[in-house]
Structure formats: structure tokens, C-alpha cells
Image (cartoon, rainbow, N blue to C red; front, side):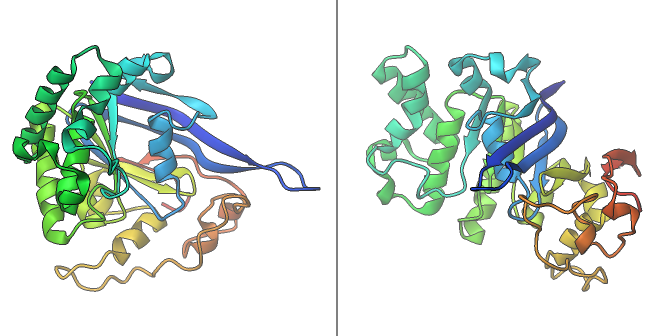
Length: 312
């Protein structure tokens, strides 16, 4: 069963300039995917491709322009606050700025319970301490403030805060990028253990392709608000088909493989306010033809995955 299903999700931001016609930044432009229980969807792409906007829209921090999102078969717009927050939670990138420095660890973790349930303060404290154990923090640390914790410990507090409502889906927005490499491995292993223990479904957003490959079951590659390739992890990483995916994989350094013959991505990411006609990637693509500059390729099934490219 698919725990989360996204269909044709769009988020367009109107931009008004004096004496000029109204334009729209298409941060998301027809994104569709589904994720089964206990699986992880890795979402990759350059800065500005729409990954964070996707996360904000799924968390109802942004109102979608069009499209639908269902959580366990229920449209997320019809869910009450308590039901919604019990279904989906988010872990943020920066463990230093994503938690309130004026609150104690247990208060940070218990806050969703205090807001969304009728549990007493003592009951919330007990649950917060139990959740701290799950993420590898000693309950004795419950009364400490954030400045008394390391970056890895703060991120564990953020994970505990997301877990306390027992969600089915977790959005992980660059959850280890601000941590030291040794701590990254610990947090990733913790996330994978929690997924097995609590039957969690993850949407894992990251720039680090090695991390994404390690934790994900399927990969969604985004470019300028659109999905350009979507399929099983091994197929996408070991045999990428879209020119953009090929360039991304080739640009990821590794001591285990020889330098790739794939050309590096040329040029800058186009302005989302004035994107190229046709395929948005055609001005940077070594395989582009005249057709690519005039027509927009649809995401179609090819080679056991979905690809948006005429030349594949």
C-alpha cells in the first residue's frame, strides 16, 4: 500500500513588477510520485530545483496551486491538524536553528503532544523521555538546554520531536548535511533502525548522492520544478538515462571509481522566472536537438523507470 501519493502537484508564485505583465515562478510544475510503507524515496537535484518547496507544500506550509496529496488514502486538505501531524512530520537541515534555544530538551520533544493532545504535562514528559531513549539520548539529559548538546545530539532531539506524534511519513530535508561525517553515519544508521522498528516511510532530500544511494529505495530527480527521472535506486544510479541525471552522478566524487567520461553540466541553472522554451534542460544538454527547444518532453516509462527526454 502506498502511504503517500502525490499527483500533478504544482506550486506557482506570482511575481509582480511595475509596468510589466504578471509572471509566475513555477517552483513545482506537475510533480507526481508514490511511496509504499517502510520505503524511502530519495529526492535529488541542484539548488533551486524545487526540493524544499516540495517539502514545504507536503507539510502544508505552502498552499499548492494545483494537484493532490493523499496520506494513507485521505486527501491532506481534508485532515484536521491533529490527524495531519500524526500522519506526517519533518526533520530539518540545521540542528542549531530548527529548535528553540529557550526550551529544555523534553519540552522541545513534547511540544507536539502539548499542542495536539489532551495529555497532562507529566504524561508528555514521560513520553518525551521514552522517545529520547529511542533516538539514543539518555533521559537524564531531559532538563538540559540546546546549547548543552552537540550538533549530532541536537539533531537527535529534532528526530525525537518528529517521532513523538508517531507519524507514518517523515520528510528528511538534508538531515545530516550540517553534521561531521562520523556523526552523519550514526544519524543515518539511527534513521534506518527507526524505519524498521516503527514502519516509517521516508522522503529523503539531499545533495549528497552517496548518502541518498545508501538510504533510498527509489530516486526522484528534479530539475527546475519538474521530475526528469524517477525509478529504482540501482537503475537510476548505475544506469542513468536522462542527461541531467548522468551529469549529476558523474559529478559525485568517489575513490571507488575512475573519473567519468560524462561531460560536466555546462552553464547556470536558468531563471525560474524566465525558463527556456521546450525542455528546460536543453540549453545545458549535450544531446539537445531542435525538437528539445520547441517541445516539452513528458515523463514516460522507458528502460524500467520514468524519463522525461526525447533522445533516450
